[in-house]
Length: 334
Ligand SMILES: [Zn+2]
Image (cartoon, rainbow, N blue to C red):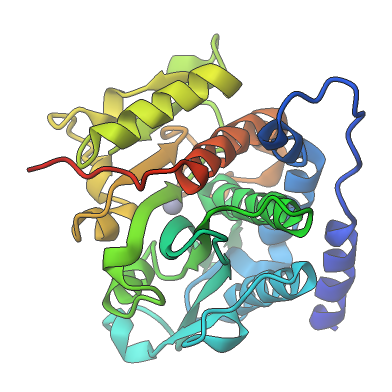
């Protein structure tokens, strides 16, 4: 029965984004960025954070339903599955989770092959696991991290539409949904130990973890995002990221948590860190903490969907630029 519900909900969510009025379109990238819409994000997010998915705890039934939703979606869009991981699935055995998981679990991987530099890969990632059920209460994890998971689905749809219309990315793009983040970054650790594309050919990881809310600091000025890590390994990436935002989205980029002295140490606290550890440049996109963080009150009704769409567009433009410019991102010398 639950499977049936999921299929029905999936069909609703799969209904295509409405076509934009053509008149004001300026560039190709703007045309495809405009396919990212608040209503589509909302449908994904409400589904992924619904009680039916039981808080998506690693290795449990609700999390598997989320994984099934992703694979059905990528199949529907026609994205590729990496050769070594058919059906978009990288299985991780239960033992790998140091007894913190009740079963094996999956990373989900789908990609679009680059037209000119297929062996250079841009990773766009977000974890999809959350805290599950405690007592009788479901931890829905709407912001953490149904928001990032939904953003990835919309990004994949936009890039795939571009590909179908003859404007696919020059470099390959891998859309990666990590498991086991809440248990200790297990999914991303497993991935870098078993990469679908060699780490040498991995250009960047754009990691999305909590992008649907506004923290207290920015309650008066909502169009912001914290960026973490962009200048640590590649000044080239840092510059590209800033310029892209200035050109297209004009969000306030807040680097507070990028400060090496910041006591929160967010740089090491989500999945991008396993890429940075291997000298791959990263950007961590994050809205900051809030009073619903890791509580049962992190629910879909509290997400700002227009803002989620705007932030997702920033990530789209950044990935577009990295994927399509002539030169691969330049790593700093040290
Ligand atoms: Zn998270």
